[in-house]
Length: 199
Ligand code: ZN
Image 1 (tube, helix red, strand yellow):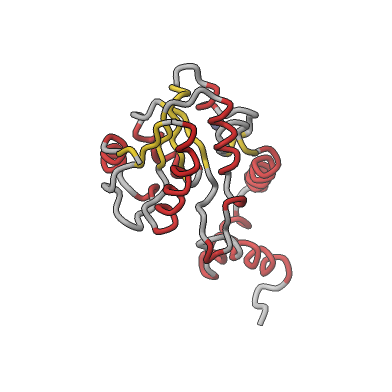
Image 2: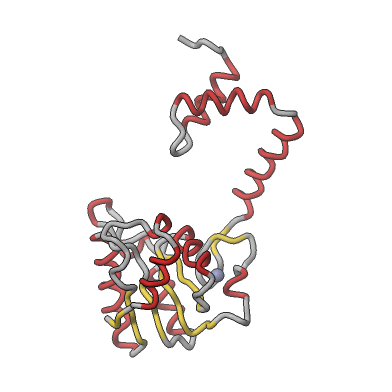
């Protein structure tokens, strides 16, 4: 039964489509929103719309940015010869939070996962290979998660890169198996980075 009718039900339904938002949370948010000052709601929807329209992939590392080149890639103080390969912009943010890594990143946007039908062409791997051919890369640090797919993707990349002679390293196993990079504390991340091994 449609208790609230029309617009309110519609708002609850749309909110409940968002990840991690169940029926109850959607209801709570909807009630919150309808009690917000109108200009605040306008601002929120405008920011959402602007973000959706203007955020795109960085030309070089494929993280999300509203600039053609993201601030990290554009920074002259970063070591552009060391590229850390991560699965997602969130993993990149986790490493950035440690403030210790001075290189640049490459965001794959996923890992190879045959069970989910995600193949080599579905992640930004071709773009990585083109980038290292174009740039003067000295080291590629593969920091995909330690899931089965993350490991398999790391091995695949290392084989692909081998002929180029670029040093390829893998972050240490200090990162727990199946561990999601963004959930791991900074000390563990740093240890994993410092203890990286050549593959
Ligand atoms: Zn970038």
